[in-house]
Length: 200
Image (cartoon, rainbow, N blue to C red; front, top):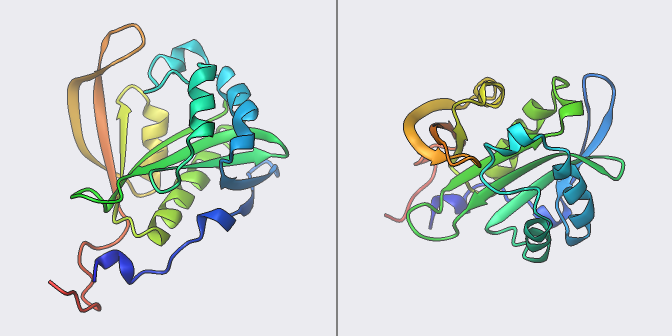
């Protein structure tokens, strides 16, 4: 039996969580559904050109957002949205493989609308990603981010992520300029649980 069989499961299809930000704003966290396509497009339209320059994907592309909405597969990419009413104010994802030697890893990303920063939303979503990862049997979470993004790195560090590596000139921004890549990790579960009788 594999290690991920011994931990409590989480039903992503029914998952929702209500929360309150530091300023009293009430929000709802839930997985993205196809009907979120337009709201997600509007959310990413607000991303500044300077910030978009360092994002992995061209999030201002309507075709890309439509593709995400059309091809949702929670077993591979799990997008968690933070909503204020019907408006998306943050987007976070866990990307994972279901087989192979990286089945136990999850790669995370997060983006918070500029109007809702410094309200504890980033920290809340990072903590929630870790809780969801535990329920999914993920052992380690990995964040890969340009080392210029000090604010996001600080948020993840506060949530228990540690600096695993810094790779010079690993990625290129939208202007084709090389950027150093910071790799942060968080241990969600021990690789072996002594309380469990493994079959190997």
